[in-house]
Amino acid sequence: MNLIIDVGNTFIKLAVFSGSEIQHKRSLPKKDFINSLNEISKEYPKIDHCIISAVGEVTDAEILAVKNVAPVFILSREAKLPFRNQYATPETLGMDRISLVSAAASQFPEKNVLIIDAGSCITYDFLSAENNYLGGAISPGIEMRYKAMHTFTSNLPLLKPEILKNRVGDSTNNSMHIGVIQGVINELNGFVDEYKKNFSNLTVILTGGDAHFLRDSIKNDTFANSNFLLEGLNYILEINKDRC
Image (cartoon, rainbow, N blue to C red):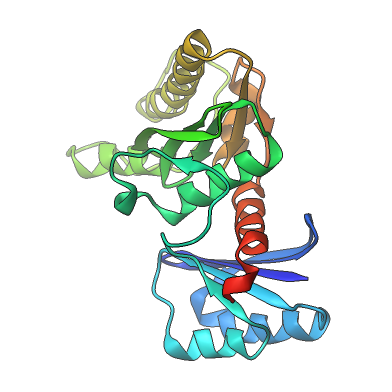
């Protein structure tokens, strides 16, 4: 069994895989990490390998706690990857995007794949049918757009995301909701249409924390998978176990 640890700036995601099947998943504040790690190790005593992917800080004490569970592979740019990275600045490519493209390479071989991750930022990553990662795009996420309107104006409120059926805003709040959510939906559909013009038989994956706001509004066929990044990390661990 594999233990997957995805460390963000505020929260940590933990997942247990048996082969390619996810058995357990939880998201927790960083302060609860050690206690949750101990709970999972007791519940799944057959865990024999771990991977840590960190955007946020991981302390020496936390790494030691993970090593007490099983041998650990810490994801870095020196990892073996299941695709050819043709990004012009590979040293700047985030571990989250590397993990998403790895999932695409393992699950959709010999296909053109566009992965859309709707989180703090919205990232677009393209893997060609020849297994070449070509790059993509980054734009502000839903919450960031709400915060920008509030921060950089004098009178606009800070709102939480909300989908409205009406496409004409009859109040300032409704206008902001439509501007953000419909704007993101139009952006996503525009990106997908553009990729489809240039790459045949395109497979589109939608993932990330805000995917539920967008899934039913995208006109193009997409595979929604909230575990796609974790699945990519699990696959990276599988091909790097000799480095634990």
